[in-house]
Length: 91
Image (cartoon, helix red, strand yellow):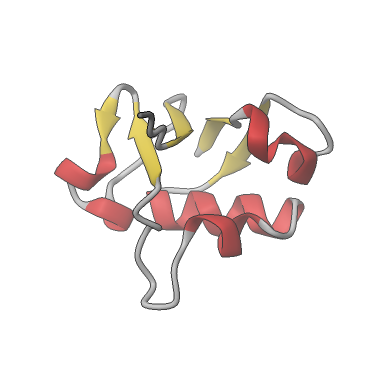
């Protein structure tokens, strides 16, 4: 299944400057692993030591926040878009 991953500006250096990368995977976790296989470094930047998404990373599959669906097990269907969105804090 081809999935388009939207890469935020802060992570684009890991993807050779690309704003989008297409990978083949079926879940959010598989998308991250596939992304890391092609562009090493994504896994460490997105997944914490306990195997969960870092608290400062949001992942959306077709505008649905993966934290409110199945987390890393959220299905990503052929043709869907997964967006990686770093959390922004202000003050």
